[in-house]
Every structure is written in C-alpha cells, then in structure tokens.
Image (cartoon, rainbow, N blue to C red; front, side):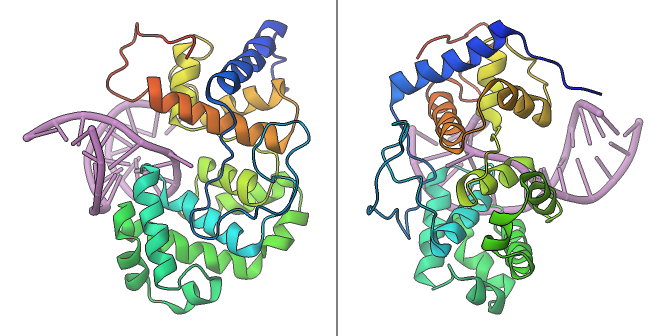
Length: 244
DNA sequence: AACCAGGACGTGA
DNA sequence: TCACGTCATGGT
C-alpha cells in the first residue's frame, strides 16, 4: 500500500513546530559525547542549525561512544547513562577489541549505574560482535534501509536505538522517535497517543527534507521540550502545551 | 517514599 | 497485533 500523502497543513504544522522549538531552546548540538568529546577543529553547519561541527565525520572512538550511549540511555536518564560511559572509559572499555575480550559480567559491573545492566551488557556484546562483521565504514557506505534492517536484527536494538545509531553515529537521515515525541505530538492533537513507531517516524520523514542536521536537531529539541513539559505523570490529558 | 527516566523483549490472549 | 510484565539504578 502506498503511504498517505500528508496534508499541506500537517507539513506546515510540523515545520512550524521545529521553528518554535529552535527559537525557544536554541540549537542542542546532539549527540552528547562526554568522554571522547567533539572535535572543535572545523567549521559549523552551513544552515546554522548547529553550534558544533556536524559536517565533519565522527572518528571511530566517538562513533563507538555514541553507540554505547544509545544503549545505556534506553529508558534511562542521561545522567545515569553518562556515568556508566565514564565508568567504561575508566576501565579502558570504550574500545571494540577490549569489549570483545572482556567478560560480560565485568561489562555489567562497569555499566551498573545505567540500570538494566545485565540486559545492556548483553546488548553491548551483541553490538561489538556485529561491528566485527559490519564496520562503521562499511555501514556508512551502505543503503540506509539496509543498515536499519541489519541493526534491528541485533538483540537489544529496537527501532529507536537503531535510528539513534543511524542518525548520530552513522550520519544517515533517519528520524528518531521517542516517548517524548509521541507525547508531544499526541498532546498537540496531531496523532493518537497509541500511534506506532513507524507511523510517527514516517510522518516526520514525509514532511521534512531528508537532512541529517535537521533530523538531529529536531529530535534533540523534542526531548528538551518533553523534559520541560511532558514528563509522564505531571502532565494531565487536558494540559496541552502548544508553545514553550 | 513513590515516581520517573531519551526502550526492548518475551509472553499470552 | 497488542497489552502487559520484566529488567534496575539514581535523582526528586
């Protein structure tokens, strides 16, 4: 079946929301890379979306740190995830080879602060096994849909984590949907609360130009906005925030 | 002291 | 398909 052609007003709404969020919060410059850090060497994005240097390919250490971060922050606040990243770094474990050679129990111990540490340790093991077959450079060259399907075959990698890896580590234009995205869009009355992941993802991708910097910034802004106004409990159903 | 946080998976209906 | 239980630490 062909995908629904979104209405013009829907396209305007989604694009408008981006402008409002960007004006309110400013560029977020995701993905955060607390250990390897962002190289401050180059120029900034042409369109001015970003404070950082997003046209420069990330180095392998940064790519791996981003990938580990996407797993560690699954249903977990970034504070706890980044503490775990720091702990991994202190053990010299932000390294594919080291992660392969290290027992799963020891990885679990290092990432304890992120919660779900047994599951996440397994996922990390699955990931580095995957990366031995498909290197970052290989994945970067491949078709986006192919890469996404490969990532989704890894146990522990679901749609959001796969899209985060694509968008932030591999710089492929794949829009990331998270819980905040769903709450915000439902709160605005654009979609139902129960809308499934792929439908919401397709909605954004069908009304936005396929641009890595735009997708990165939009997702980051939705999370920022969601943290402020769409935490799970406090916001009741009738409590719809249209503008930050 | 409950409640929440940038999910994913297994299970039974 | 889908609703629900499970996995877990640390901050408010």
